[in-house]
Image (cartoon, rainbow, N blue to C red; front, side):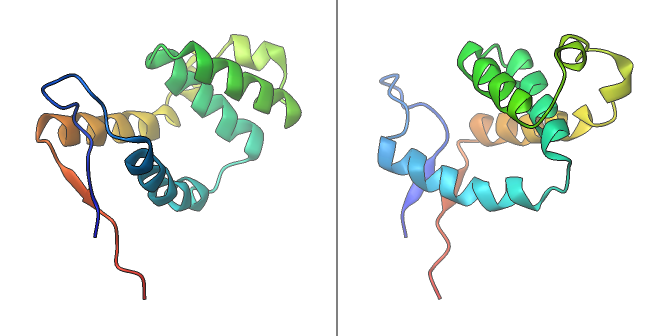
Length: 113
């Protein structure tokens, strides 16, 4: 089993590309298990990307939201209260990330059956 440390090493290096791929593979089923309309899912991802200040991700999810039929008007109103309860999911995920980083939590790849 390969362990992935979510925390940066003391030398400032992040996890390797191979470790990151494993983490993404593990996260993808979790993401797909959340039932949301595809356009709304992209709105949540855009807002999380805004909170995390990731211009790359904002651009990627904005393009994807448009492909799913989302309007510019709703994308411009993302900080409006109507999405507040849906952003609780973002807050929960970010909380888990903070706990994992602060505690140097390791992710163990499940054994293949």
